Length: 290
Ligand code: SF4
Image (cartoon, rainbow, N blue to C red; front, top):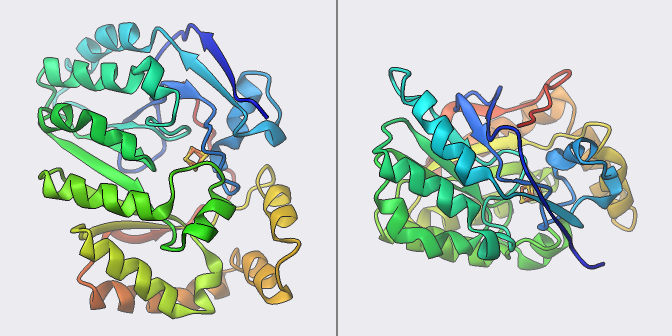
């Protein structure tokens, strides 16, 4: 299906968030052409009249994002200290359309131009971030999170349908580290079947370490009702064992059994768990909208 790209005018570009590591979020696009099957952000369709099942097939481009940001940054800079901001929580800031619109670049330029001192976080799966490497170096307090869930490109293509392959992300991570950019890896979601083969966890952590990153954030798979049917359908052809572990991964028992394995492996590879916590979503979550 051809990607639907629609240009829109946003009313605001900075949104509040419940993400513990940020005060504000910026999402220059609504929708994400990377189309990850586990994507929690697929609820965003309801704000632009798209169905849940259509996730990955549309991107709404907030063409006035940079213009809004030029005003909003002045508001942020009145706060002391400058708030922590992250791009992005419900879209990928470096998905394909960024090549044409360069909204992420424009937003980052406002941070650089204003000598913004607060933490600016970027979370992406895309090597396109390297297009902005020189710009990234000019932002005072920047941190780049690369989302990597596996080292297996076949699995990456299966689950993260149109996202850059895991191997490309690991290469990008190394280039960012070599350039002196502060990085972390977001293992989100932690893929539940890795419990059946802990050597996969070892492989993932060792590759992250080899790429030069030491900070890691891990989040358990989150299967709210707008994601679960999509994942169930995808896993229908998989073995009973796999289906079983994905559904039981939501239980406390699963988390209690896997956590020591994850922590041992982190220690083995000298990786530091951000906030010393593996993130687990409980109860009703606030849906973030800009
Ligand atoms: S890259 Fe992120 S926002 Fe985009 S589909 Fe994948 S998980 Fe969702």
